[in-house]
Image (cartoon, rainbow, N blue to C red; front, side, top):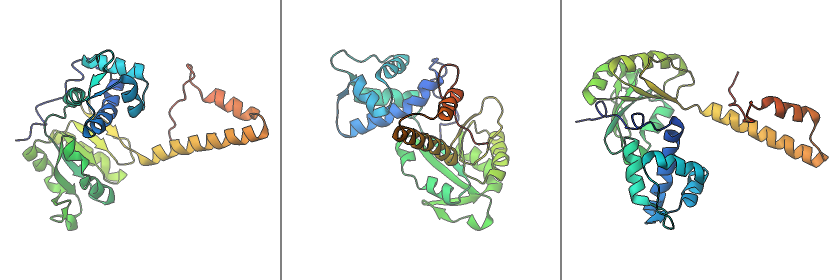
Length: 254
């Protein structure tokens, strides 16, 4: 029987900061790669480099888990894999539904990494009657009219929305009403959810726009360097774009 509805990860009750929670999957990915190579221990510096963070931040993050490593030896790889998996709730079965089986939804259904990371695709759901019954990744697509029954029958608490933007909020509302409390949103829109429901948004266009911003800045810096100086307008722009602590604010589309 599915257990996703009744068991929740322990991170919030343990007071682990959200920023640390967001980095735990990075550590787990790096540790899993080490485990697959039969590496028994790893230093904080090596693991931090593999995860793309600094070692001081890694050691602080691990202190929230109660792991401090052994001086001169480092961290036990297998134990950390277990410990982080447990904190993330990955030592149990999490049934997931994917709503919207277009190109993106079908690609997600075919992704082989779900099962190895504690997630089971319990159902694929689409509003197109012509899709009903068609197998995608070996799973027959079910019509959205049955969404609530599918959620209840499978004990689903995590839903993935891969619909067009115009349909996403209505799908979200139905998922929440049926008992889903965590949503991964691939639709290019912001969802409104009640308290107690977690939403993670994946927007590829925003990520590409941020990369375009950095590419434009690098091109400007290279042009300035070739001219022997930084244009005044660019210098003013740099200063204006920085926050009170000198940090670069997130770039959002207009």
